[in-house]
Length: 371
Length: 92
Image (cartoon, rainbow over all chains, first blue to last red; front, side, top):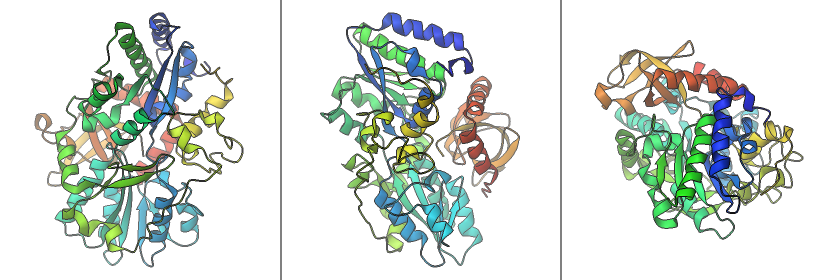
C-alpha cells in the first residue's frame, strides 16, 4: 500500500476496497484481466492489487501497442530506415524496442535518419518540408491511435504528397481477446475494458464478450478510483448473477464510439489476412493494412521491405505475460537479464508494459501471495 | 504515445484542416480537432479536450480535465517525456 496514500481521495479508495471485500465471495475466486496497458501502469503505481481481497486477482492483458510489435516488424522498420536518403519517423516509444539484432536507436546511432515524432501529422510536416526525400511513418497502436494515422493519410492524399508513406502496424483489440478467451491456458472471469479505445469504437464492440463467452466487462477510466470502481462493478455482476457490458467511464465513452473516426478508418484501412503478434503468434484479421484507395501511401508497396518473421527470443516470456498466464516477476529473465535499461522483451520497454510497470513500482513492495 | 492529455482550446486556426491552438499546461500547440467536428457544432474556445498523438479524442468537462492532469503529474518521468515530445510538435 505504499502508493495508495498518494492518490487523491485515498479514503474513497479504501471505501471502495471495503465494498469489494464485502461483495466478493471468498469461495469463488475471480480472475479479472485489465486489457489496457494504461490500466496496468496505474494498478502497479498505486498498488491497487494490495487493496483487493485474496479472492480477486488481476491479470494483465495484451493492450500495450508497443509490447505486441514482433521483432520481424522492427527488423523491417530498421531495414527501411537504412534506405539511402530516407527519413524514418516513429513515436519515441518505438526507438528502444529490440529487433533481432538492433533497435531503431542503434540504427540512428549508425547514421540512419530516424526521427521521433509526437504525431503522424508531424511526420507529414517533415515530408512537406523535405520534398526531395522519402519520408516513412512507422504507425503503431490500437483503435485509439489508428484514426490519427487515417486522418493524416487522408490529408496527405488531399495534398497529393508524393514522398510520404506509412508502414502500418495498427492492430485491433478484439481478435487477441477472442484468442485469449479460447485459450486453454487461462480461465478469465471478467475484464476491465479499455477506456480510450472505447471513445473510438464505443462499448458496443465488446458485447461479444458476454454474448459469446459469458464473461462480463466493465469499460473503465484511468484514475485509481475508476479502476477500483470498475472492479467493484465486476464483483457485483457476479454477486447478482449478471453478465453484461457496463460502462464506468460514461463521462468520456459513448456506446457507439466516434462515427467520424470509424468512417475514416473504414476509408483508409482494410483488415490484413493475418498479423504476427509478439508472444501471441499469428492471429487472423487482427491488424490493419492500407486499403486499395491508399495503396500509393503504403511503404510496404513502395519499398522493398524484407518481410522477415523472427521467432521471439527463447529466454523472454513476454507472450505468457501478455496473455496473463504468468506475472512479470515469474519470467526467468525479469530484473536480471531483462531490465528497462537493457530490455530483452517489449513488456520491459514500454512504460505501459506489465514488466516495466512492475519493475518500476511493484518490485519495491513485497510480492503479493498468489491466489 | 499511449497517454491522452487534457488541454483547453484557445482558437480554431485552420477550419479547412480542422486545426486548433490548444493550451496544454501552458504549452500552446496545434491539434487536429476533426474527430469532434460535428459534435454540437465542433469545438469552441474554452472547451477541454483529451489529446492523443496530436488529435483531440473527446471532449471532457473541466473537473475531469483537472483530475486527469493531477493524475498525469503523479506519473513523473513518463508524463514529462510525453510533454517534451508535445513541445517538439510542429503540426501545420
